[in-house]
Length: 271
Image (tube, rainbow, N blue to C red):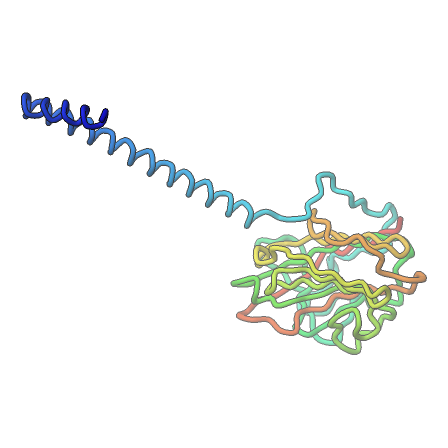
């Protein structure tokens, strides 16, 4: 009944003052509709921007970063190599491989780097095994159109110092541990043939196609911790009965579209 009275009043008003009232009425309606449309549009755009920013932030966020970086390098240098005295195009003095590697310079990046030939494993050309407690650091330099063109590389520790064949994992060629960087699959896999420990972590390696990656490893008796830059990716029992440990690095089985991996700035220290 109330709605009918209101509508009747509006109709009488329109009939008595048709031109002026119609204009004012429709102007108010138009203003309200335009204002509402603007508010809705702003909400949509703001929400879209916020959502896009949040998604971009999540995509670019590096996981497993410690609030307080817990890696502490050993106090006493055990071995260090920056390839300073090695000739370009040759294998470095203190290294050996089953395949091919050579010392190179990279434009815009300081120092010398060891280029890792595909399907090649590298070890120190010495019978120097790792101490019982030690830290090890090195840099990985990547070059590729897309990170997935790098395939997968791995590094870890073996029971002996042989490089008679390419080391593919912790269960191959007398290996003990393996950390594999799957650039194409965007994850990191750790494994140990000694403790049968195996774990895989998602990691945005698609963002590491043209960069320097710093690897830090700390071994205390049977426990091993590993960091990629400042992301802690491993803290687990990887050894048994303090075996001899010989460090190795294995290049991908193949590279695509001219991709390449290099290593440099190797440092081993005793605790």
